[in-house]
Length: 92
Image 1: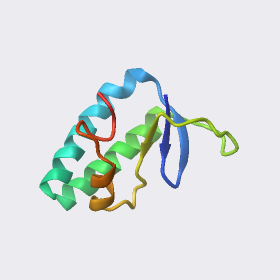
Image 2: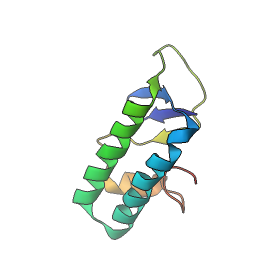
Image 3: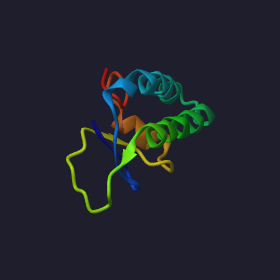
């Protein structure tokens, strides 16, 4: 799966990592819905760090279609709220 972090680029991520990422995504969804700014910041950072750690960066010149787009680390709570689906940022 190709994942884009807005403002950073793309990484290739094995589907086997989705379970771990979905746990963080569920936490993020709950924090956004509850308006927990501190928890939101912490969990968004953890989610993005996990994607960077588990994924293999694609070269900057690669323009692959992204299957998943995540907000950048400086995204605000309202911006992420607008990006959320019923099950979070990550399907599943």
